Length: 172
Image: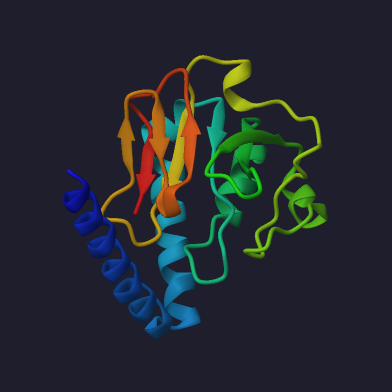
């Protein structure tokens, strides 16, 4: 069992390295074009349209841009939740974002990602609702996987859930 797990970790590491190399080759213009297409698809998706509460990642420079989706969430009067990782842990909570403009006032992590401070009290997505829509991305994993009551994200981060909606949107 341990050998199989080690082989999977090794394969993931190799795949991530290959994907990072490929991503570096994608021009900023192409990334923007793909971001716009993805934004249109997500916003037009029936589950997105029906949802009232949405969890979404904040994109890094080399990822698909999520800023327009976040703006639309607020324009549509939906509630938006973003990740807050615990320092030196693989735990992550989805916490409420007050507005799209608030993002740039948040502190940055060592990965250069905006997120609310660990000591900041915020509504957690699943403390006030049983199920919700979640937009997840994968950073070079074979696939982000939803297993039981935990969403397993890239880089080994986990988001404990009391419920995993059948309509979770996964962006890989």
